[in-house]
Image (cartoon, helix red, strand yellow):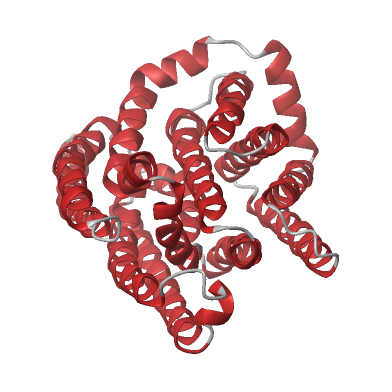
Length: 421
């Protein structure tokens, strides 16, 4: 187990490091308004990861690990749906970017990057679902190495720009897709041309639609400030928030990667009614991400204390960055607490009750964030996010505990009945 977690954390850490380096290069080079656009688009790409998990990754994991035997052509069906939806959505990013004042070629670069990054993300989900974890690690390493080498080149050549940074991400993601290996690529290519619609439709009806609602309401809980600040006050107002959250980039990537990694195994453990093993896996998951969060906090303290002005080059108010960092520390800690229980509920196919949790938290978060932005400004919108995360974490923990107790009682009853016969 420990080796698999190291592979997942190591891959996430590498991807996070490359993202951090690229963001710092932009932070030091472009205007706050331009960096705000870049930061906002990264939020949109991250939302795409969540949608991919909801519509494709989670239902596919359930189909491949809780059904004996899995239906034929299931993976091809999900690859086809993922490709078509990612393509259509990525095309919308170009006009959105241009609407924020960027050049058309920059908008096109964002569209290509989003398509390739979402394609790689679902490829990772598939590889984890069929327990090919080393392939995922190789793909992450490929993305990391390519983007870091490219970052060094554009820095030395003094060619740092949003378009070049996004193009580097495209190159890393594209080669990362190839690094997943022949089998995922072959399944994807077959799926694009010949994948049937029925398995995806069934998965969407049973799990995907509830998971999608959960993603949308989770986004409303976790990132509604990004959209509201950008739309109400402009990209320049969002830039300090984007600058502060980039310091925490490793944490959500680690949570998402570990969720992809552990969800298939949890699904099998729950299918086989191994409740104690499932609970041990959850505890280990939580301990791992909280340890990661603590190390991240130590690194952030070192950067903020010694190198904040070097990183920002005086373009941003350091007090705003520090204040935002306090909020993000609490928000990310709460996400680390919620992540393992959320993975457990997804593995059990409990997407509908999980969606209800995030609906409740979003109904509190959205009006609270709007009020805080209107009366106190962009930075205090994070207080609303923190309160929403606390509500979601509490409800999710209670729900997961209840589900485990029900499954344990059910298993005990079935065992007693079998002994009686």
